[in-house]
Image: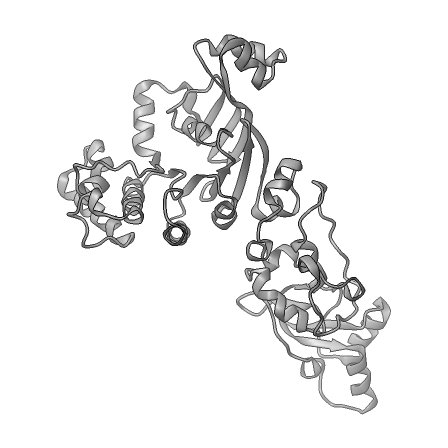
Length: 426
């Protein structure tokens, strides 16, 4: 079961939302609904799921409904129709007392404009949620200090918000949200008011804290670069409707419609996409020490080279030519000793960092894990395909491994693509 389930949520703002909902479902458009009834459509039949421990980003332009949606999670806004389940419990049907307890213990919120109390010190602001819970002063201040130190504000606990920079104020807001130890963290445009450098630092800190704490974070932004950088999954809203939900690579490589296609067109894909995105299995994986067997397999399958592995660990590349030469010269070395070592990539490497090595390599580069185990291979043509913005919302087609080597030292053509005559598959 997902931690958060949003089921067919519709929100209409106005004095008679239920009546307006009937008219909307009868066929009125968003514009007609406003013109004829004076009601505003905020969300239209939105459904999505959020898994425990992930950073789920909800993004869209101004007026898309993203902030409206996140405020439904803790019922700062009530839906006109639909349900929101958290750990299987419907937030929409909670009583006032149940909702109050839910907000205090299950969810914390970080706002764009920090939401700090100017008459309280940093320590008092961070400890405020614990104070509301009835935690003793000594205990709440001890815990608040722990989080003040975690976000890098030790020494500022006696300062007031007006004495801090914007980035420092947002760290206070983050510490306050984390101090309550709530399972879910709601962040509404939390970094939007910060300077670019401070914003980047806060993104780094959020990712670091998330890896340590495993919180479930719902993050609102209008910045696609920010969404792609921090999000495990991204939901894109337009005019209150859900356009697409997917991982960053899915959003970039398989946009669901023309709106998403246009949205992602100018993204620096090389910085966002990783080697794992374009990695595929090698056509020939050679195991064992026997050269005759390896050569027989290569001839049978019609490939000219293969990736030699020992106990799943990559040892190098062997070619038909090198194996035939070893046999004809009665070379006593085994397959592992003949295999030619070379550069490798990590699945987490950005394509921007991996591309130079891939262009210089004679063969598609092997991708290995931390233990040196072969995970797959990557060729420049696969990278080129992934880095080319989509012309339509149709899914990208995976290329095939032909088993042929790639010429070394080729140039990159316009738009980051390889010259057509030099596009060889791995």
